Image (cartoon, rainbow, N blue to C red):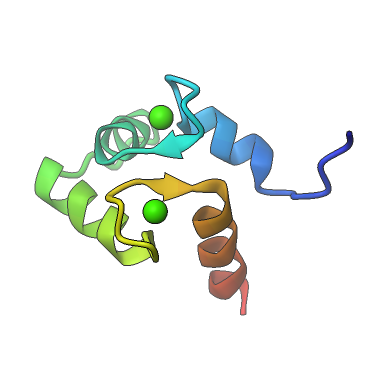
Length: 72
Ligand SMILES: [Ca+2]
Ligand SMILES: [Ca+2]
């Protein structure tokens, strides 16, 4: 059952309510913890940029694609 997805642990960390989706609220909280607070509007904008199926939430699949593309 080993998940080879190296981003799954990070994803779980951000997904504080364990619904397997990252919401704008969770992203906002993460940035606050990281010491780079963003507004709710900025969080929603960031989610929209990563959310490829348009459900307003980031799935592990979308998160992985985003992180992978950032690495180049
Ligand atoms: Ca969540
Ligand atoms: Ca989505």
